[in-house]
Length: 202
Length: 338
Image (cartoon, rainbow over all chains, first blue to last red; front, side, top):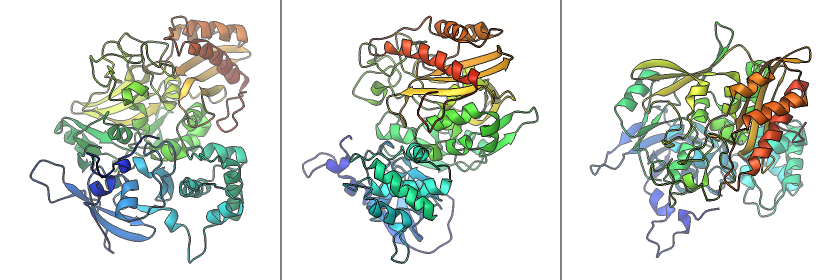
């Protein structure tokens, strides 16, 4: 893993990621979604304008004003305070940031939020319903499918996508189609068992 | 990541005219490679033109019996498309050998063709790299080059093209349809990617102002005798050290038509007409496969850390040709090599 901007300390010449992305605003509202890329208040100094983006996250609509470079992961964590999705590598290599966009699993660290205007996003925070854990969350607990837990939100969102795809039937196929989620603790055996249990219930 | 202008294209003509009006812009679709490169400051486009809303997401049969694949079809959708699974299984297999399911869900077919090399020095902006900064030198020659090329290299660059999908498309002799300010044109797959020569900054023969709109597969799909064999450091989710795509047509025990291409060994999917011709009319046996493997690797050159790839590739070619001839293609979920 490489050092991230989050490592920037008070004496660092670099602004922290939080300071950089805090410039945007996040207001949950109900409104019709537009697919136009609407530039807001173009600055006069030549910097690219911020852009209006509407995202539905875990069923709640948000009207956001974002820099084009904001990744979906940063928007979830820093604008919407949904810190369940983790920034492991920030390069699409670890899967800890996996979320579902319109039901399909993707890595949110390589997804530009402005490109997802109008999309429906599900994160780990949106899986439990009416105070009841999602079958995958319960299965991960039942099978002790984690140790430190850092990769777990990504593992569970990825497994939710895997079950929806319906391509994995055997433990071998589960392993192959879950290979985009790395677990440094090595809980793979129990992760596969948990996914098998949840599959049996779906 | 350096910030950039952003716009959406409403249709193909709009995308092309926006690009013509914006020097230094790039098209973006899946973003799985481009966004990563932008985070590393390897790519610094002044503007991204989002083409994901263009109507290029269909897989259709052509009037000539082939298949037209829209440039925006996602890698996972293509891999599992019933027509691809049935008629072009080598393409399906190669797609499933690449990346992870999350990335395949994001990555477009057109973008897969335009992936940049994963040479570590290309990514490391503190080191010289002729592909990233022409004229600065090649750090991989004489550096850590275990993942680098053994065929078609130049003094300027020994990078490899990282795609699995493209190795299968080379075997299928796909055509790439593109649109630009000068209109539409079709590029045969063998002419799409370039060798590094003295201009390694140019990966392909696509113009900077051109947009890939579709990929066309001819009718011949080698569904009965094919394989995609990928050798890598991890069993899944790793780039190839060496990969081999094969399509054979057999008559009795003899080879009527043979095509094979190598991935992970060159700046483009590597085919050698002479090696394929040597297989035609021969009995499908190890002697013929070994001769073909020797021919394709005759001019291979190692750079130290990657010299082992020459033998690895030779054995992988023989193994892959055997798998295809037997009709037992490599499974991409069971990792036992057949």
